[in-house]
Length: 301
Image (cartoon, rainbow, N blue to C red):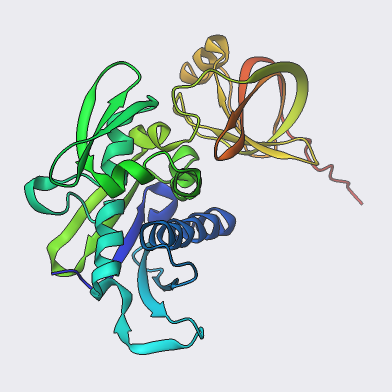
């Protein structure tokens, strides 16, 4: 039975501390709404049928997503939940938000994107029983329902899916999972899988540039591979740090850091021109100097 609502749970140190970046959360939930609305419009051929409404439970770091259907006159139907309608159930199933759906554990968009793991779809072949064989660029194959094959690399789907999982590519959120009533978790996307959900996953950058820069540390994360939040005063970026010498100094406790310190560094900017739009990632390749934040002077009177 399709449930009338489900929970989206953001889990990790940021949530455990009772904090989550407002822009990060808002962007992710807006993208989830766009993902569901776009999938419904593409699969049914009818636009503006659904809207996603959110109820939050900040004490758990989880967020209830209630979905209702709107008609052509844009009036809300108070007693009918969209997810309970055949078309609504089909859209949730195609996206795979609640795990493997349909008979024989048919995969949805989430599961197929995870399986592709950055590989591009080379071809599709329709087979019997309403299924399509997807062939990845390395020759691997997977049979999926026809609507899933249609959506899996559709820009209107991949772009919001990437934005929805963006918190996993920053610091503080280690898992996003979907929960349905007393049944508990039905699907989860972990931080280790986040790369697979980017529209540019597996592709070589369209362009790469390098430049020296001075950045102030806004948030640091003492685990290799995690992205630090850095600001040059006019732009804030999330960047992984690749400098082994820098990391050895941290791990041996030869240096200590605090937010508001400065880094003089060499930065690499990679960009991808994808069907979902322009994507940019930053990497600190070398830290030339660490400058502690200036201390406020005190005066004796």
